[in-house]
Length: 328
Image (cartoon, rainbow, N blue to C red):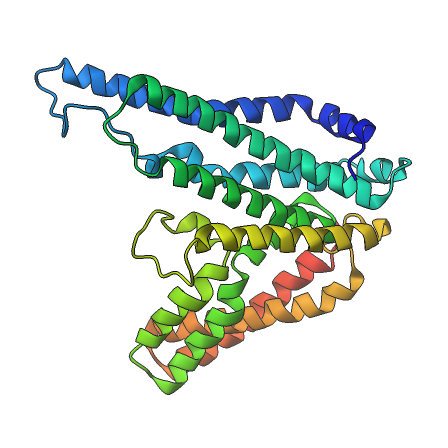
């Protein structure tokens, strides 16, 4: 499945980048923890400084690494596929005496492995600091690392799958972010328009977003507070199990796409020509619905609604044409 020679080639191809990102990711939380502890000790020795408790505490839900670790997954996925395709190195990689499934697995497990190792090293170092400094409380420590890891892997697999469908790094990023908000576009926008038509109080719409759309939207796992106790759950462990299911789903989509994709369309938005027209239609529909909602919200009139839909159709048509049909 993963060949040592190919793994070595992939590592050496971006060795310095991998090492630097691993170091920053692994040391970010321990460093932030130490800096916070140092500031607390300095405050204790300052008579003008007021502290809430006589012992040090660290709240991990505000930790920068745990909050932004998903960026590491996006960066690795774009670097391994989009940047390599932009530099014309993908054709060389595919010409090596390895099957496409082997190349895919090697790339995927290298990136996923680096993400997992960075989280594991960061966790161990931080845990040792906690044992040594013995803070009063560390809310969100274990749960924060688990959610951070699965969210990073989810976004890595999502953007990796996007990279197997697209012909450039820009296309990969656009498709990845669009997929991250796709449930809001496919389900949320039509629900908003239904609400316009039947003129409800809006409470059912809020519940639909909270219970139906949010749990299956990848973007929700980074923009919403993952430690909120009042977040509506389908079942216990949802915030961990659903991202894991998404990792498997995106992994399979990427595997099938990478095995089948035509390399002669490098530089196009989509590697599969059959995807061009359906996606263009989807973009136009989303433009119509999105701008129609904005137009109605601006003045609460049917005129604004219609004008917004017309503008959205034009914007969607032009945007989809220049993105999809013009080779980069």
